[in-house]
Length: 142
Image (cartoon, rainbow, N blue to C red; front, side, top):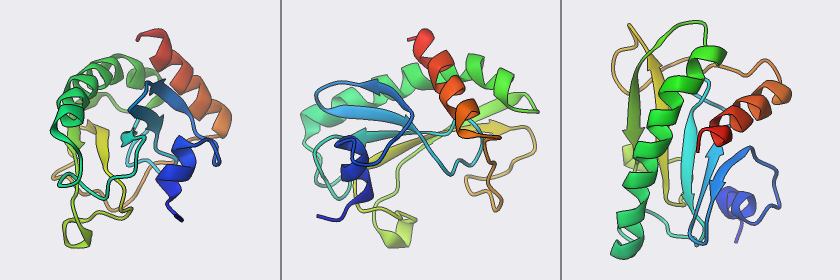
């Protein structure tokens, strides 16, 4: 299978991993909407929410809530503007904006004035060192 998220889960492609257990992996998005943008990935390949077993789904949103709470603290250090909100979203199918056919949940810090869930321009980390430092700061608060 040529799935980029499966390769990340299997450590074939490096990532800034925030959290990992037997079923889920949380990483910082390498192409974030804003710094701190995280993805919760299922370790097993499921195309979308319709394929994920219900018992696994019950673990995802409590983890998303915990990660979002931590982001409210950590992102202040790495973003130029104060974080005013957080999107938690998950797309199913290309028509819904799903770009990778592997279940993943986005946790996206948002600034005041950003309207809607789509942002045309994306923020870049100053360096991989900055991305990894932010990941370490987040992990310290877990």
